[in-house]
Image (cartoon, rainbow, N blue to C red; front, side, top):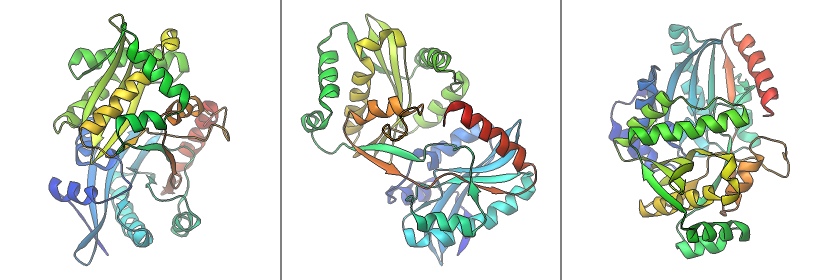
Length: 341
């Protein structure tokens, strides 16, 4: 196998279009966003002879606790049988880059089935489980090819009732928007949620850059739920490669009884259908029965109400390159425990 950088957007996106397991974190435009926030990126193609069999968008992360290379939701492959050789080939290239960039470790979390076979691939190559994941390792997904009535019928009874009740409420309205004021409104809602749940949301500047990068190809929209003209709930949804992704969401707690986020989500699902998507990815899942105290348990119950299926992937793995990795690992372990993750 050989590896080389891909410079053609058409070749990159064309390959990903044929892949089943994927997210926009490996899309061409997401790479443009990572560059816009100051990260160095590489778009690698792994070839068997002359056939492209995998791609990987890698980025250089620089934080106070250290520098590392990351491949979020990648490498992306079309066949399970190639996983071992793909990762081995990619690792050798990343180790070379890491030396040049003075990175202390490499972090990857591909959307590969969570199986003993795939776990062993990482173990044999010298990876270790990361103390903290970079993005989701499991997700709740909904097939949206059925009609709207069928989708409503497949919802949990309570969810279906709440969607229909919000549709009848004349004081509730859902609108889309991508103007600077819309981005500021979304960030204001995110800040309110962050304060309530004690986490730091994406900055307004980064959200604006993300939207700018994805907006060029019409791949993103903000959905706002208004109550008597006031924005009280919102979702940032990405539409890419036939999939709608519920990437970010926020809502004001004092309006929870109105159930507006249910209508916001339903309108996003309908928009995904209108755009020709066949799948809706709710972005992040944890078994609420198995982990009832996990921070994602409540949001997962909300997502499950719309119908769908859980998908579980291999855990996030790190490849340590120097002693500088270990202080980072200790710091992230402590932070994960504090967050209940």
